[in-house]
Image (cartoon, rainbow, N blue to C red; front, side, top):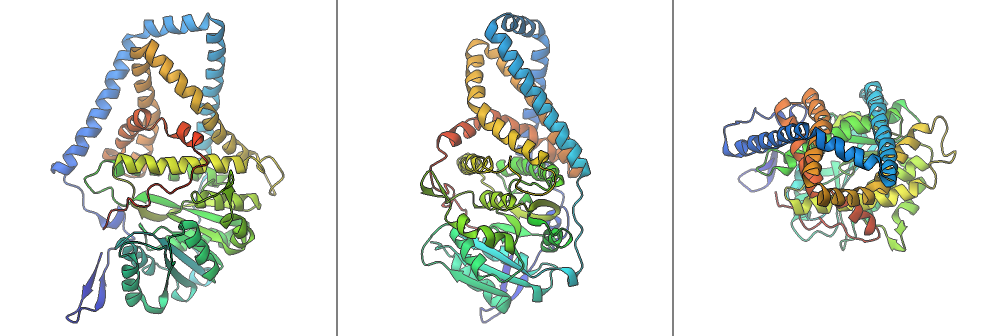
Length: 478
């Protein structure tokens, strides 16, 4: 996007892209022969070939695997390990099929008519986002939502770059439709949102990250569940990757991962009306639910320190605790920038991991109480799955290293075969929803996560009390 300026240098018109088209931004079919795309094709092909070779090796080593299992089974600790492993496998397999059942039951709420839409305040906090914040605000202004019911707030959280300038440029274009504010110093995203909540006058609050673009019908679809379900307290949007057309490979992998995380996992959670996290990139909250927990949210601490991360998961948790339903809208799209380098990726995952540890501990305080009307078994199963991941993270790491040192070939072949099997589901899921050729990034991402990011959860548990956003200074200028 860009501002077209007249001869006087003033902003006169906006060059817009059609945000309501799919694939996103009405993109042309990529040229697979270009060097940029050839690199991606090569990575996907090599990933898949490695997994196929591992499957063949595992097949040829069947007798070795059989002997290994027999040796372990005949020892007391080996038998105990087998029982535990079998129990965990059955739980995870059962949980997967449970999610599959919930996914097929899920249906997004259709967008309601203009006269039924609630008044909505959209809050866009920004820090060192540069020109991207302008594109975010423009996409929101283009929304198919009644202007008289929409309040746009942008808050510069003490940026050190030209973010405030681009907010002012957006203000010139949008006029009274947009209100912009500037924090005197950088206080963190939570405090920027807090200011927005107190300034907003909508029945519904929508939060949008300043590096995100929304589709034209996103706001309408996002807030519609509040109209049809009076018990709905929050709604999660559907997040896709914005910068997956660049040379970097990580965004392409993350786009496939996001599709599984949102369109499968959150669809299943939404069927239980118990989405565990409304993403910061796009989420909506009933104002009554926000103000009921706002003081606790802004003053939240962990081990005596103020919480400056995980504001989205914390807000979701506090709204669930009040007894509200939390839903997911698959038809409410936002496209957000993700890290393009390994350093940015693992820092983002550490932040998410620490937030996950903290909020699961908070969730444990109420999830087994009578915290809301109706059925609660589903959300308790979701919680147990979350806790199990945390509990098993250290034993799995220790067993992995033990296996590597004692039987490296068996470990490598069995691990790669497992990746081939388990990653085939996200491949098929993405191919069904979007595009077959891009779906193979799921294999590449699984390889990266298994061998390059396996340490994230144990490290996040050990450092859960640490503060810091970690990636706030990594923003690339658009």
